[in-house]
Length: 476
Image 1 (cartoon, rainbow, N blue to C red):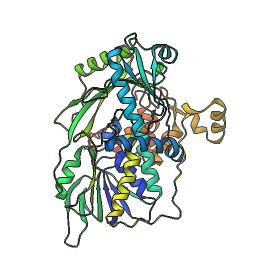
Image 2 (image 1 turned 90 degrees about the horizontal axis):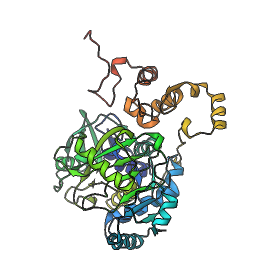
Image 3 (image 1 turned 180 degrees about the vertical axis):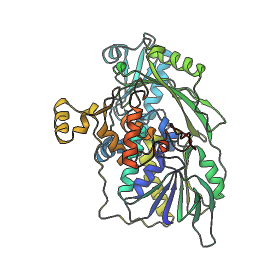
Image 4 (image 1 turned 120 degrees about the horizontal axis):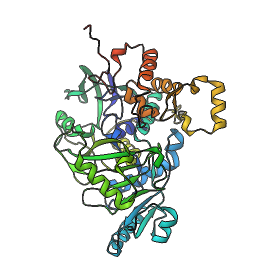
């Protein structure tokens, strides 16, 4: 296959670049090694749309974050039907000695153009965050921050890019990058060869490995593991904002995170590791997360936790790596995209498009670019009147598959039609299997629907791709 641009990686960075480039008359191919988009670094993201504070004004991270936040609030959330909520954040101070640091963060945020920053006292906090513990004395209020479902953000970008002509190829691990004498690239992925003049390396944790395959200057991705703990949805009003402690050297600290789906979350921890596949959780991580969270909200208990998970952040220095590799003409590196990468992704995509244009890629706008994506319907977001009208049109919305999260058969079928090919793909799109029973009630129904929609044998349905089959054929 020959394309104008090959993008390696369908996480948030690759998805955003694909959607941005799909505005133009280009042939774009996205290669993803996993069974679905967002199954790498992006799936474990905390889902925070950062405002831009806590990043130095001189950093690429800082100004890309501020621009990404603006794009989300003013364009993307509406255009792509995203479940973005601008709830704001608080950065907590625990005593008078912390106030100079809060003042510094406020000053740097204002230099970056973050609006509405304000120092608030304990009286303000008592009115607006009554569950905060007595150790919190004051905070920096950051109104432009918000929350979103990180994987649904990725899916929306990919769906819209594909709607505009981009091609997504999953289960395509890149094993070789060749540079023919005539220029451009030959990328071997999943046993197939893809050719293009331009290549965007957005391979997340494996970006350093892809760079080495292409013969570009070396850099190292160091995984930084973060363990997070999801709380029961009944605690949805535990906090009204995203609550941060003052940041440490390597981390923004243990947070109280409102999520787009209603469950509070605590974490993440932040510890460097050498293993790019280590997604384990630990007793030590749980103890650290609980201690940090209880310093902010003492009422949190271990019994409130319904799910443990961890993710790996692709760290490479203090800032993002976004550059054209002059020694490998046509290769653009997008690497080291850790926090606030989810927020910055739309701005990163614009930056990559500018780099490609300067290197000779013709960006001719399409006359019929489809910028809008209808928001998927979810029963939990509808009023009773809206639900009744929906049921009159399609009774399948009354067939409840997942009791914990109130997910209907119609929503599961829609998720499969939108691209879900695994049980995790259905879960990330609909929340089915994400409740306290972890799919104990709904998994068999979902498998049945996937069989019907995809024409698969039951033994071919997987949790997250080959090797994670749930049902074995003992006859073989």
